[in-house]
Structure formats: structure tokens, C-alpha cells
Length: 493
Image (cartoon, rainbow, N blue to C red):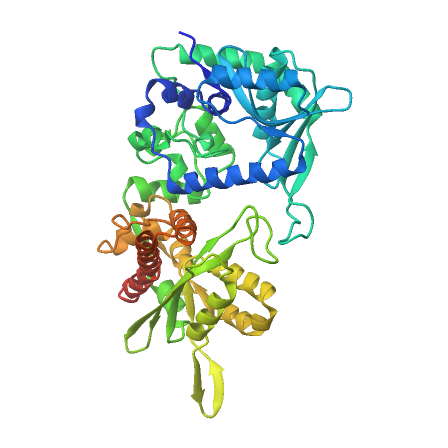
């Protein structure tokens, strides 16, 4: 049976044949697309729309689920002589694709352009273009030039530089074109198999795109070499070459580095290793009151606030739990709820909480350790605010040396098999503070928070806005409460 192959399915198959087979024969085992993935799709469409502005003579060929109609519409547009087409549809019969931009060159040949929401050329972009070129050439188009239109990292809102940079990849695409026909033949053979291909898990499960079938493939395996932190190099390559990924299948004849063996033992023997002396020394360096602090941020691919570049992160929310030396706990928070620039209002609210100015011996000074989980991120956001808002630069810079990173405890001094090789707060919290959980929250992680905020500031539905706001506040509050409870646990050791 000839299964229809879209460009996206072909790209999936070139990354993992098993994922391609599953997408046709067992689509029900895929993990549903997340809200964050939906947001990336929406923002990607916005980037495509902006890229078309450089071709005012172009026409958009509206999407039609009937592929035959879409192909006929494209053929008519070409025959009519339109110089530039957006979203044109082509097919070889069993392989079809839609192309971002197709524009005529002065000699009547065609220039094929792919628009990507990235700032750098990636290898799979070349394959993507080569697949499109194969289909178009099969339909008799004279293609002469291939380009990627990528986001310009030097662009600054509102108008410092152009938003897109053109990368001529004609040579790379021409070099890859001869491989495409065989790729398609191989993938068609895969789809005609009665059983799913035997493909080993690996980096292709996450790169270049997160695979919808990752959980289906990974969960039955339990503890794998991919759960070992910082495990890379020849030993990992040798295990993969020998098709060994489960930890309990690692052969004795393969000596591991001391660090790798320690991590294998930790997971397989379900060990817990805690250096209480080192942890107490770290905790003794903290100065009360303690500020448990967390940002939520957004990075627009098309920057919309002054001075920002593509994907440059800016904060829209923070949560801060303040713990004094007597054990009293206060909570402070800020959530920007409108579509205008959040940076000034958030910065002022944050400084009101974190400056903690107190009069002691007639000297006004700042005190108190600011605790974050992966503090480097919070510090980078504060540095960005200082650069964008020079009127607050001095006060913001004074916050930076007060930060202390709770994550370092779990990187250096606290190892637990239950973390499954991860040091993230989402892995640590359910093990050492099981009574707290993100599972029942409407917003469950940082990527979801971005999507919910984007929806919240865009909606005019007051009831919907309130629901989304409450979800964001609950999530960010739990992030800092989690750090408080982890701190209490560490103090009790």
C-alpha cells in the first residue's frame, strides 16, 4: 500500500524510521502535542507571515485540505505568471510538500526559500530544502537557487537592522539532492513493514525535534545510560554501537570511569549519598532573611519591546518567599497582566521586595541572601533588565552578588537514585518533599507558563483571563515554596 508521504513525515523518518512507522500504524501511542509546542507553531506562522513582506508582489495560496485542489491552484498560479508564490503545493503522486516562498529569478528560473524561526543554519534545514527541491524538480520546475531566511540575531526592536538574514545554501542543497530519491525509497519500504522497526533510543529522540513517541519507546526500558549525568565520549559511543542502553545490561568487560560507575551504582543499587558536612557549610554561608526567588520569562522570536532581539528573554512574573531567622514566612509576587512592556513595573515591584533596606547603626544597607534554583538564569535576567533600564542599573547590579544557587547542593553534595540522574527541581522535589507536587496544577512547567501568559494577555474574555492568571500565580508560587521546603529539609539533615 503506498502511504502518502508529506515533507514533515519524511523529515521524521530521516531522523527515526521507527517514529515514521508509528506515525502511520500506531499514532495513538504518541504523546499529545503540548501547549508549548502549539505556541511554537503559532509563533512560527507569524514569522512566515513577516517574511512574506519582503515580496510585496507575492500571492498567498490558501490552504486546502484537498491536496488535489491545492496542487491545481498552484499550477494555475504558475501558468498565470505570478512571480512569487507563498505556500504553493506540489506532489510527485505519493510525496507532497508546501513551500514557504517560491520566487522567479530574472532568467525565469525559480528561487526556493525556506523560512525558519532560528538564528543559525542547521543541517536538517538543508535536508528539508533538498526534499522540497526533489518534489518540485519532479514536477518540471527549473530551480536555480535555494535559500534559508533566518532571524537576524543583530535585530533590535523597533528597527535596528532587518528581521531576517538570507543564507544562500544552493551548493549544500545540490550536494544533498542525489540522496533524496533513495531516502524516499527506503522510507516507503519502512512503512510497508508489518512490524515496527527496531531502532535504538538516543539523541535523535530529542534532536532536532522532540519526538512524540519518546515516552512510548523510553518508559519500558527503565534506567538507561541516558540517565547518567555527563556520560559521553567513547564509552557511551561503544555501548550504543553494541546496542546496549539499559544500565543493567552494561557488560563487566567494559570498565567505566569512576564517575560513571558511581552513577550507575547509585541508580541500580538505589543508593542515597549525602555529604551533610558540606551541605551545612553551604547553608552557614546564607544570611537572613532568605529570599527564595523565581522568574517566569518569555522570549518573542519577533521582538516587540524596545531594545530586545529575537528570543531575548524578559520577565513577566516573579514569586518570592521571604524566610526570616525566626522561621516566619512571607510571600510576594508579581504577574504582568497586560500586553504592554512588563519590564519597568516588574523591576520596581521586585526591587521593593529584594532591596530589604534596614536602618542599623544609622547605616542604610541591603542584606539577605537571594536563593534561586539555577541562579545563573535569574542573574542573567537581572543583567538584561539592568542593560535595558539604565535608571535601575545600579540597584539591579547590587542584587547579583547576593544570589546563592540551591541547585549546586544537588550537583555536588546530595545524590539520590530517585532523581533518575536529573538535578532539576521537578525531579528533586517529589523525592525529598513528596507532599508538594506540580501534577495537579493547571500550569505544570515553565514552557506551559509561557503559553498561558501569552494567552492571558491576548484574551478579552475576563473569566478566561482570571482562570489563566490564577494558574500562573499558583505555579510560580509553588516554585519558590518548593525551594523553601527543600531548604528546610536540608537544614534537618
